[in-house]
Every structure is written in structure tokens, then in C-alpha cells.
Length: 64
Image (tube, rainbow, N blue to C red; front, side, top):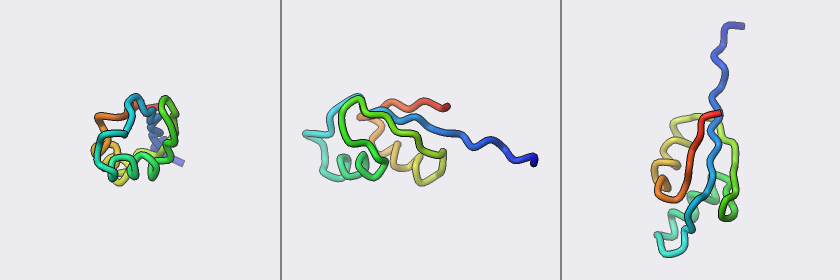
């Protein structure tokens, strides 16, 4: 089919959002992360990338 394989991002929370802006915690929730060391798989889209950039200090991201 010639389509590029969709890049998946594995996003893991490595730092607590407590003590940061509430929006940082809300962004983690929007990404689907609920607690420390919890990982989620997301498609690599500009929207997801922007959310990751906003909480980059709280998460670890791996391309899968």
C-alpha cells in the first residue's frame, strides 16, 4: 500500500505534576497518563507533540 508506518510514541510519566501549573497535570491527563511511571502509546501527531513539549519536564518519550 506504500503508506509509511505510523510512528507510535511511548510516553511515560517520570516526575510528579504536583507543584507545577495545573495545566501541566491536565495535559498529562489529556495524553492519557494517570499516575507516576504510567506509560501510554500515542500516535506521533503535531497535537501530541505539542502536548509532550508542554510537559517535557515530566515525561520520557520513546519512539516505537
